[in-house]
Image (cartoon, rainbow, N blue to C red; front, side, top):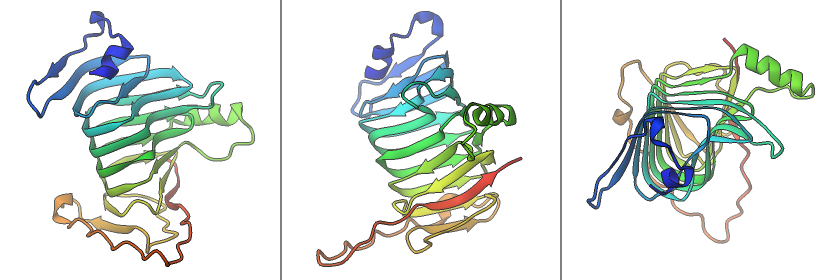
Length: 246
């Protein structure tokens, strides 16, 4: 509960924390609306239900850092973040985290000037986004371009260092989805317009049928480590979706 203590939540925010005392202790946050960032940094299981963090500047609304067992985001909202002097603006980001599983359901990541989701600096076992929204409104995008006439691309959602990424029946609007070759396997259900794979040998991408469970797709077996004498080139990112506009 270190993150919650650091932020100093007043009782009026309606924060509900349930902390078990067993070895499988977890932290549950329910029904919170904040206009300041939230950091999850404990080696525990987090559950966030109906948590809304919006209206920030020069930060990420939600940050994952340190070693974390699991994170569940259920019907949450993160966004409306503008960049400041440090140039930071993300709905969610990873800052050196090592996360076993990250699951987001019916959760919205919206209107963040730079990144809707920035899972770059860290590593993940399984990451699942199901019935989520990655969205930049037309008015917010117009303001981004007005503030920076040289900018030509919308905010991105970028994924690195993930064993298995599941993108299931999500909505995408005015964003770019970037999958780095360090992501080993991607399971997609639903539409993902503008799919472009620059290096299909680096990441296994599997499209499943409507209603089909992601669990029906076997987890990709770990590949053997290259020999020390092998020549390894630095892979380029894979852009899974070009600019997606409604």
